[in-house]
Length: 303
Ligand code: DON
Figure 1 (cartoon, helix red, strand yellow):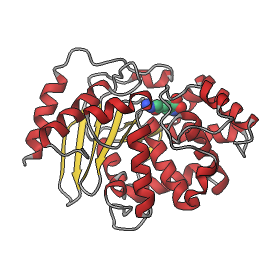
Figure 2 (cartoon, helix red, strand yellow):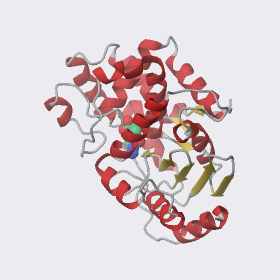
Figure 3 (cartoon, helix red, strand yellow):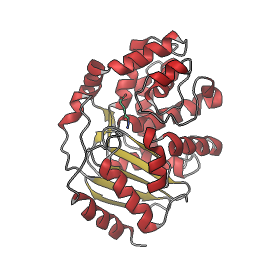
Figure 4 (cartoon, protein in one colour):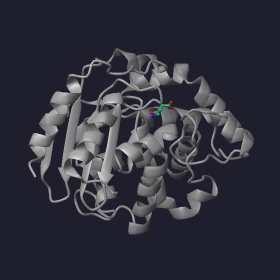
């Protein structure tokens, strides 16, 4: 199969779509990005790589970071983290509060904000300098020392993060946040403000398509951990649109409000798209379309 031709065809189709969705503005600093950006990068397990469009331009990875944070926490703490978190889809928006109150402070899964804040709390307990430890983890996974977070985006989210403060306070009231609200959210906002290109994200997710071994063949997670994290991506990676993503694309994956989506076929490939316009569920509109076309054209999905 000529993957470059497939990617080029998808690019040509997708950039011609008039309704590109809406850029997230609830974090004001995210709203400055040009809606016409579109990047797509594919890395096959055998090492072949293909890219089209703005696949080498850094963007705010936002919730995509939640998968890497979970991987780091799981690699240190194993399944004990499940004492504080569930693994069921929420069927609600990522920043919804009601479910957390009803379910006594145990987040449904690690990818909604409440769950990601619990994972952040675990990392804050584990590491003296959690931002540096997380950055080093990503830099080691990609072999790229230049990856960093954008302090302006972290600051902008801190200034407008009312729902995350409410969530962290609710977790604290149930005893499911061990460190202070400020400390955990300061870390969480920096984690979400990481900037990466499609190519760097693809590389960092290689371990999920390679049975736990990163790009440099070092074992980072057990096969069981990878199986489990991929399952959570499939069922919870797109919040109340997880069913739609499985239906249209058929891959485990994760989106972020910066417009990125990463998805993978275990033992086969990782693919990342970036298109900043979001649909009404907060997932990249053209990214979902591009990935639907990719798995339909190549017939390379888990189904
Ligand atoms: O906490 C937030 O709201 C953002 N830092 C991340 C949200 C996000 O990316 C949801 N993804 N689709």
